[in-house]
Length: 365
Figure 1 (tube, rainbow, N blue to C red):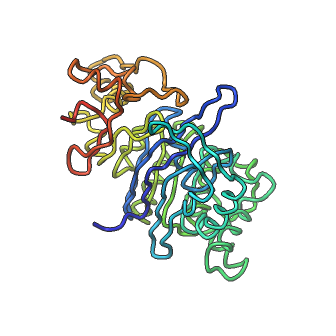
Figure 2: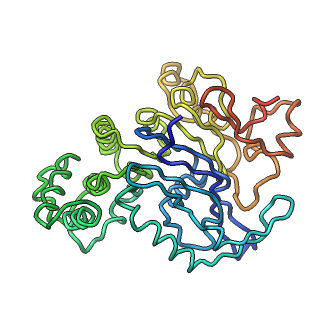
Figure 3: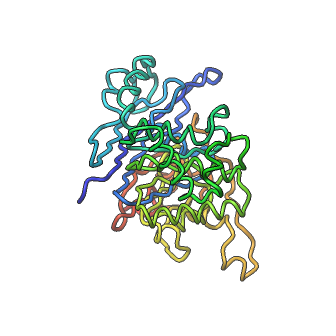
């Protein structure tokens, strides 16, 4: 087996709620891998931990305590590194019966360590496209200058002129109209779709090994969303960039992803090939995955004029995570044989077929 380009192991990102005197377990024991050239789609309801996982990988979690344990291995032709190296030196965890009761963290020391580790990684090895392009771009600096700054910082471009031509070339590749004109525009002078294209150009101009796209079509109208997805599909075919794609829109994931991770309550509930997980006729699915697919329109549903099936109940409060399965209170597939296990013991994420893992007692002996 080839070493994955990105390997996330036992990633935990917690925040402390002073009002409730408890930890918010935003990311809780996440394990994922992405092979070189692969696109991993990450889906789930709001609050499931998708974006926080990406921000944890990028070292962009600023509030304390933040990332408290785990390993994020990055293996590229230019770098072999654990992005969370030395985290144990800055974090002391107190457990009771396996449950984390207290976390003490040297936040200042950890932030300084992350800045040192990530200085040669962000932009050069890993680039990120954020949810809201207009708020992610500097409103007081032209689009062109922001892209050329990244190029000069992370590539072998020797001068401003070379960086400018490279930036204009990338603006052209992402199909911004009149790229030489847009080069000198400020973000407020561009539409949301243009800003998103500029963000994609900035992210790819340094030719990163890994691209993280966090809800790249959020806030855009349907026509622009379709064009952005078309652009991402073209760039994937042309460049073969390894990608972590986070989206609520399962149609986007089904079009672009090679594998899929379904997250709920801060952890991964199902993980495997996109063709299996997103196929309506594939029977071996986690109940949460099946419920997600049943809650969105499909060609079959439209033909049969059927009703969409909502997921009953509320999204899990990651402060009060139950002892058993996190989806138990909303699950409609619990049987008498497994009810007690579902209620009292959380299942592991286990492989039930080749490359297909599920966290559910239905599939275990």
